[in-house]
Length: 263
Image (cartoon, rainbow, N blue to C red):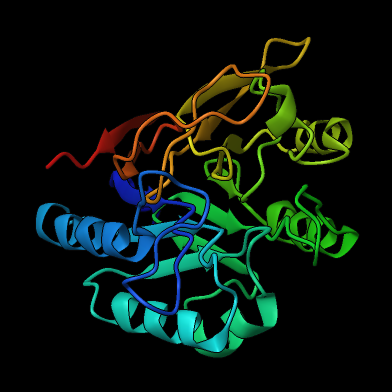
């Protein structure tokens, strides 16, 4: 019997953590302390959203890519009261994250909550700021999606953005070969949305197909620091850490909102 309840998810992104809570994010003035921001957000989410189904973390876990950072991050996440599913970003060392964050870390993880399926993808490559999806991941997704019934729905979660956000400097670091990605996604009508991080700002878009179908694209701001939208070069916006809430309805619709933690 199909589970027709509403699935409720949290998403955070771009934590950019260090091995020490006293370390400021190196490219911020005045200084921002990303570990402290993450701790504050996790405490708030744990209190206010304890009834939710899971927390998704969409990459750039570390700014200081050393074992101590991932060990500290694992300690913080281990006290959180919901299931946690995590993928890497371009600032992460995948081997270290796999070693110290398992089993929360991307394996890859294809998750099932009621009649929704959450496919956690790895768009990172070593020493590259832009995003890539491997053929192995496409093949794994195809095998999974081909086995789903028609009353099931899917969200893809990745770090890099798959459509332009109209900031040229950032769009160079988006998902490469995005045209192929959207052509591939057209074959699977159960795909309702893509969630991503990377851009340190809120984004809402839709990829439109000629036949009238749309796939929603949601970019979630960082817990570390936010960047101004629609800029030619990098520009800081504000330091308020953020998260996204999602309600996934049994008819395939999605309700979602970005929230900021204010002192």
